[in-house]
Length: 315
Length: 289
Image 1: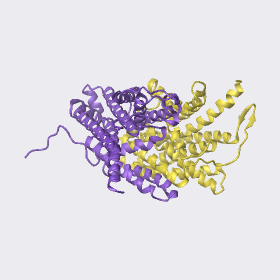
Image 2: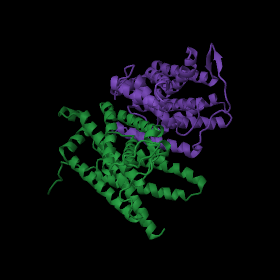
Image 3: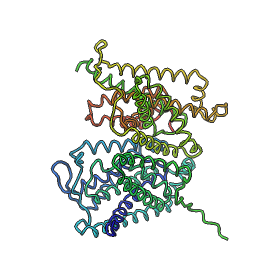
Image 4: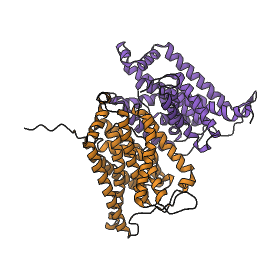
């Protein structure tokens, strides 16, 4: 591969890493700070992608949409709709242990997949939505990619700073208190279910935004674009490996896992066809195994959660 | 539509599907009740069981003879999975084990996909015509399925009520600390639970496979109805899981009256949310974790 090709590929990867970093940050709010098990990340991602696509795309005969709204409205819409779907689910399930939320979110992701496939008037069915505008899309290829990368970086940075700020605020301390000892936090007068609901809704909104960023980057979306289980699982392993409870860890994990995942795809694609199909499933097996190994040998991840509030001993 | 049509085209398929869900849901309710976590690899373990049975059938065995053998092999796999991936997480919060089980689900599925591929297949080929019993149409495989489910449920109930180890399992489910104080061997109960759960997984996967088709995602699609059934019946209650399974199965078949057929799979989810909203302990008053 020549230098230009390599640079193009690096920028492409960096944009996707940024999108995954947003997803991992969203999951960090839910799992890292609040101990909530969201097993339907791909569902919220898809909701964001489709919402923004419908709001901003060009009109098409076979489906709703083509409102040609400005981009920012599309993104805001993606976040609002993802949050609006998370709210009732959280409201029902967060009174119980996180297992119930996990089951319900698997269900939500399945239903969203069903709706996207079935409701052709809304989502274009299997044809999906094309003609989604891309910011800076009129520039030559490289500049356009670089400009989009800058946009993603700004958004990830903004999300990082906001989440980090939130974590250091009393709200973050309270969330960790609830995560680590629910009964004690409740005894201190914290409304556990309500706070968890906030974290779940915030995190889901962030996942919706990531979906919107993806669809504008990709310019189109079809139901086949995301494999729900594998996408969800990749985000989980990103967060756990990077270090749950640590925002920098979430971003680092997104970069490490996405690079390994894509490079291994390039390698397996070079294999002869008969083996290449099996190699695809071997890769899935390996991410499953990686999770088990991380859980066993380094459950705190590469960058462990920082202990706030306890200043290091001074000499 | 006559009553017989209703029974033949909606009720009977609903009961067959429901009893398959019931067998899976019993396993879920046992893990949820005794080991106290939601086991997400349950569906994919059922897939594995179905494919193990397929491998046995390929050697010339009759499917219904292959079933007990596949149940025994999957039981061993379940114990192995517990020893390898869940056991060392026992001291950590239970939700970590839930996550590990999601990873195991992915691993089991990819093993199936690598070994057997992704194309749907069946145990036996050819069309089987249903036979008529007093106007009710039943295929032999449906009769066998219902018979096998009754046999499994009765045997399991007898084991849990009468035998020493069955009582130990129920004691662990009711109050683990008290059970341990009374000298119940925790490790043995865990192993026994996984053996039963593995066998039940294989049975549900096999029966779904013989009534529809066998493919690598079949178990994953079983997961939501099975969980809905277990929670609907009441976590930790075997009869509850049977009742829940039948309700979910019949509700799915009847849902076509009010929903487009594509949304059949959404019925289980709707039932799950409804029961969590109005009666989280389930119909037969189970546990809430």
